[in-house]
Image 1 (cartoon, rainbow, N blue to C red):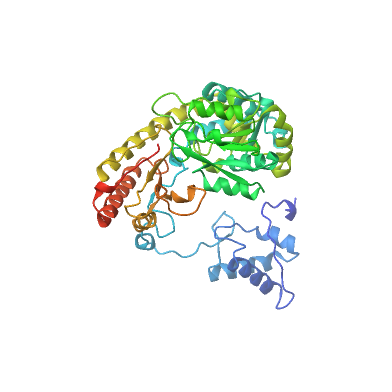
Image 2 (cartoon, rainbow, N blue to C red; image 1 turned 135 degrees about the vertical axis):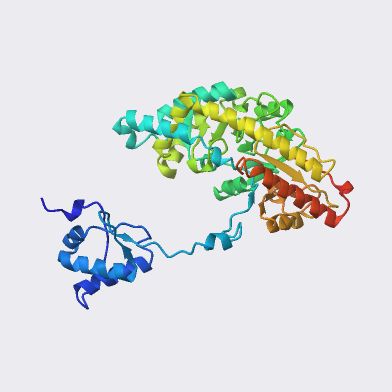
Length: 476
């Protein structure tokens, strides 16, 4: 049976000029597609037979055009293989002459909010993916409930109850693409001003602001957020009660009681609840008031940010509005990842990965504390031992934040400034500092990154004044 271009396996859109003959028109069209980047290096071209049928040319015309472009170096052919766009010429010496970090990536990545993605449980994820593809009915590839697949919502209800004390029915769980989407959906349905911790995550403040809500700063001290300052005019409060971001303190029981007595909607961001190192994690606030607290979590720090998987345990009165908002936001979250995560939870591969990561990050935090004490005698780490980041606050009589950041940048060290975490712009005493992530580097790279950071901090301080004037606080 002659080959039909409609089922030839490779589609290729070309516009041929009527001038200059058919072969030359085809050559020019292919050259333009390659030069303009529509045909990338390594891209496969259709067979001469199928392209001839599609363009209504003779096979000899197509073969001659291919041969000409092979001679010019645009295409490459191999016996028994498809014709491909040639790879660009490279010089073997190029990698050796490119300095580390010249591609825009840091030499030492100590940015917060990122796990060690080199430790991603790829084998377990692959096993779960194979199982899902082999056993799931075809219907799972069709439209999905806006709340997410029932398999994952059921698995999450059990997992969150077991590990975080969350009280949630699968019918009241909404699967999201992460906390950013969850926060955006909740800000949409909140209906009034939103209180947010000060200091707190500046990106999340912008998410709420862009949703059209007024933001009310909620001060944080050594006992956590000042929930006693919440007023009836505030519609919702976004808090991190288990491990305040970025100060690292848990919300004091008295503040928890004040939050429950307040009466408004509470958004609980449990961004790193799995990673508590000193003792058992603080239980979820949601369990004490499930009718008013929305519990939010994600896989961004436990597995990888690129998975785009998060969840909300929603009060019964809000499940309708939140589900509707999710429907019109993106219809539903990607399904295959939901089913794979569900399988990981069911087989306890997710638990095993969390336990291994918890041990690894605990060791890294202890190493960070030791190196900071060597570089900066008198440095201390108040707050609970938890999370994937440390906050180093710089005193007013030491090197300013900009100077320390510039020194880190020169050394190829990526960290975050602390000052933008406060609601008010400026550099008041205690607001300058660094937010240091100790999870992102690989196991092999972390000691080198930490050594570079310690040397940079010590050198910066020595250039400014004696170390005795420094005070340091860090959250874990």
